[in-house]
Length: 252
Image 1 (cartoon, rainbow, N blue to C red):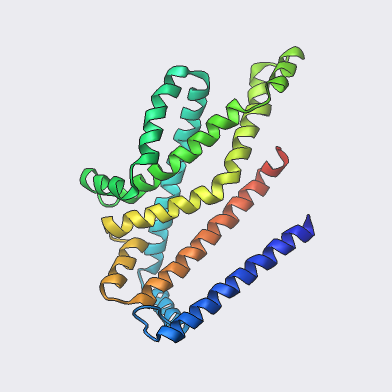
Image 2: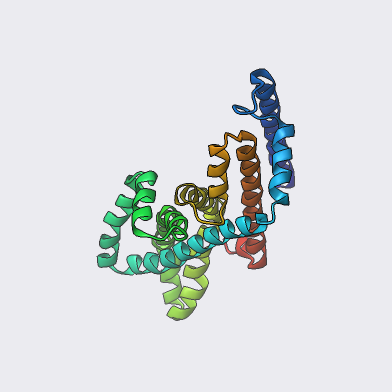
């Protein structure tokens, strides 16, 4: 297992090195910072961004929107997923909503959100709508796919319903949710920033990316992309820490 993890890390490092090499070759071949900026100009732009007095406000605002949208999605997904598993009415009501959310283009949802909502709320709303279906389906399938023989055995040994819920249903739901937290948070972060690009809230990464685009400062855009990658990596470590803290890996 340890050798497998080390092999994966090695491959991950190699792929990152390849990407950096491709970036260097492209920037040298094109030789135009407006199209493909060099690594040097990108890191100079990044240092300038970090030195900006409002940098922490910008980063923290986007992270807060991402986490808020994700937590709202998670809460509603758990509640509605449980209700759908025990009620055909709720299950049937949710199907057209999920189909709508999965079918409608993201840009259309962002445009509607811009019409309906305050600019500060639009990114949260967009992130919520994109992540909710994934979390909901995970909760629902976690309940429906539990081995019925285990439940029957629990009843056979007269285990009360509270213990069954506590020791079978809840661990299964949260174990399955934890396996998609990384990807769900990543999707949510991307959608929040996409919403920020169009909604232009005062403090946001998306607003800054749009500003850099207007001034044709491609190195600034690249710098923000690198910062976003760091935030995404931070989310990954946060999820791993929570899995370890709550011992979720031991539940399966």
